[in-house]
Image 1 (cartoon, rainbow, N blue to C red):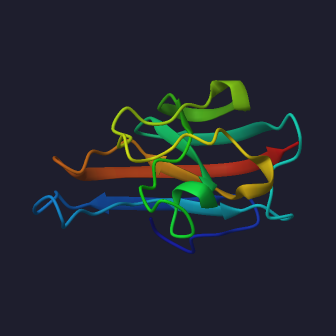
Image 2 (tube, rainbow, N blue to C red; image 1 turned 180 degrees about the horizontal axis):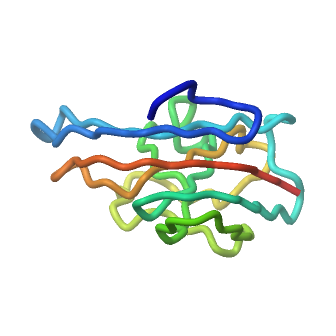
Amino acid sequence: MNGPLVTIERVEIAFKRVSRIDRLNNSWVELIYDLPNKQLPEQASITLTYQSNKDVVIKLSQKDYGVEGDKTYSHYQTVLPAVNSWTTQTVTLDDFQRPSWTPTSSIDKGIINEHVSALYFVPNLTGARGGEAYIKIQSVLVK
């Protein structure tokens, strides 16, 4: 993108994900939104106004599945469609599931709102192929 990543009107970021080298050397790309209270409200809904040339995966960064937990990073997630014009979508926690690649060693503790500190916005690019994508976010409302 030309210009700053963050402006008064929006956040814009272009990603280039390289292909996975082998099983132990993988790449990832994500835009992280730290929740102001470092937790999700009860019965949370997330409203996003965005544009993206690829589907957008929203991940709930929950410590039980990250570095403080089982380190599998198999966070609950949902997917919003690619759109070329500004679109507003709302999702609830019922829309989130763990990824199909979640290892059997990762015990599903469900979504624990107090353990979710951030939202990850990820263009749907695979490690096997890599690729390029952009995401523009005009607003995020978590309530």
